[in-house]
Amino acid sequence: MSDLNFGEELDALTTLGNRFRGFLPVVVDVETGGFNAHQHALLEIAAVTLDMDDDGRLVRKETVAAAVIPHPDMAVEQAALDFTGIDPSDPDRNALPEKEALTRVFHKVRECVRDNDCTRAVIVAHNAHFDLGFLNAACERAGIKRNPFHPFSCFDTATLAGLAFGQTVLARACAAAGIPFSNREAHNAAYDAEKTADLFCLIVNRWKELGGWR
Image 1: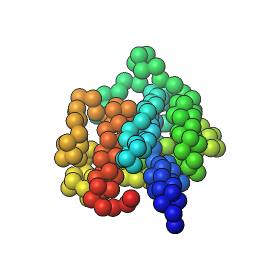
Image 2: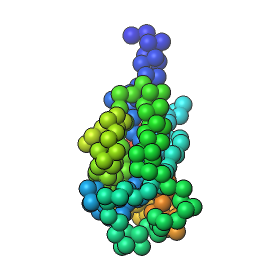
Image 3: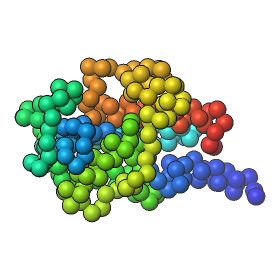
């Protein structure tokens, strides 16, 4: 193999699409009215797209977020509102109907999937199956046929942080990783998604530095 071909092969391997076998990791956080995806309302959703810099390091790119008007068939527990600090009746939330909110977020995700020559997005989240379950349930209610996310595969930063830092709570994992984290701003979908993205990028990049995937 010539040096030129070898260099081209390295360039191909360090694209975001090829790094994850044609799947695009997108960091997602949802805030909800409870713990059951089929009983409790979606209240906020945020997605953070990622990019790869010239050194092959994963970096945070864009954030798209939407407050969601609770679906009329879904319950909202007061305990969940006390925990998140969300007031669903607050007009300053500028909340959107569930389908419109999902469509807004999915438009950006599909754009990134296309731009990175990927086949599909894969959700990255802290306790990822919780977020993925709410996302899938909301898509089903809204009748969205082209969900850009893989229906069951995911990257769970709670598991990754437990491996890398011995911490599974997002705030504690960020502290162990040296990532600033404000408990006052937490439980906001955009903020939590961005901190989760920073954590995911740091773990993936550290693994590379230690001689893992190249």
